[in-house]
Length: 428
RNA sequence: GUGAGUGUAGCUCAGCUGGUAGAGCGCUGGAUUGUGGCUCCAGUGGCCGAGGGUUCAAAUCCCUCCACUCACCCCA
Image 1 (spheres, chains in turn green, purple):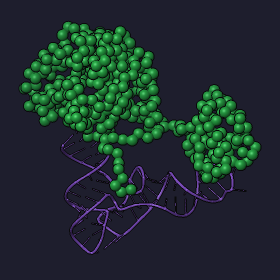
Image 2 (image 1 turned 90 degrees about the vertical axis):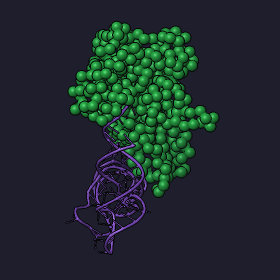
Image 3 (image 1 turned 120 degrees about the vertical axis):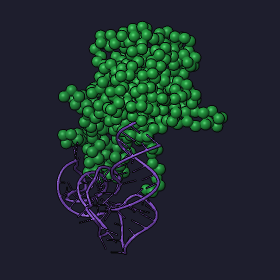
Image 4 (image 1 turned 135 degrees about the horizontal axis):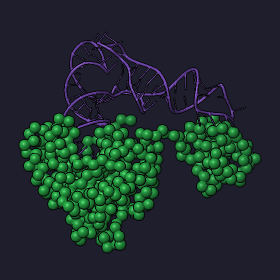
């Protein structure tokens, strides 16, 4: 097929059975979120470019070079969302959600877009599952969110992850820290790698998570944000840690953990997983006490904490530890033998579906052999053959594909037959 | 944006220092007139990523481009 259109670079088709893994992950997430009182929010995939520039940060890579932006016909600059926290914060402010009683708990599931060079675990369209807990600055919120995340990963029976925890401090701390870091970096930077020398000027915090072993010794001499927490932030962080300990959530203190988005303050965290290659961040998040306020929420009402989980990465890590089992799209395979059987056969299938039984049919022109072969390879549990004999006797030929046992079942007894068999299988 | 690796059948790949294309899987049919996943047999299937160059001769050597992958960067 010459010149046939192909998928856009960095984007991919998710086919069965992979779509099934995604659906399972999403169902588990919804289930766990509900246990903590979270409800779903759906915001548009398109936002004003300005929203991301103001919240994510003008200087970040995401805003600087990774956004899919275009000018609409009315000259408005619009952008395909690179992340959803900004959108949720925007909606929180726009609909004055702080006026509702209690903290606001929202979760979302959906595609995000960043124009990066694709590689393992990194796509230009990728799905994130995230949640935001808004309306307060209590350390209890931070702990609740991390506990919920640990529960979600447990619910998915995912193992092999590590929680990294840090505190970046509040705005004042950050200012003092940035100054001190710049100071400390001046004599050391010339001895570091080219990337670090560049980062020392553009984004000093980033120097901290340089992976070059040669630079580690120098980086170890640099101050970390933890050294500059004021009493309030230190107390906040200590409480979060105490609550995690009490809940039995293991974590690693990672003073050099840095978050990429500008709006983060205080608690920052990341769950990494060993089976993900270079892009090992399974989910990341943190507190953003000023985000919503900057978008117009009254002072104090906009504080919150949130996370985003890379659904594609989660599915990939999840699948890495499981054997693929053949699951039928429908348990019953209907084999109409010949065009003349088609009418009654389809009516029968429809009757079964009315009882909640899944039925998939094969082409009436196929041979019985081809039907059985197809049924078996589609992992169906039963094949129901309807031909002239069956129509004359009003008895369907039902074959259990696992055992090969075949029996004649009256048309009216079919639904009952399958229901009974299903219970038998489930109880055995 | 930078670097490296790889492009041969629908898929996974073989094809040595140039002589004009192969396997396994898949798919179709048969062994089995209405009975399966196994087995056996047969068949189907490729402008060897694209363009140019060297040569009597290029999948193979050289150049350019394109695509994919991984890594850097950055992040979920």
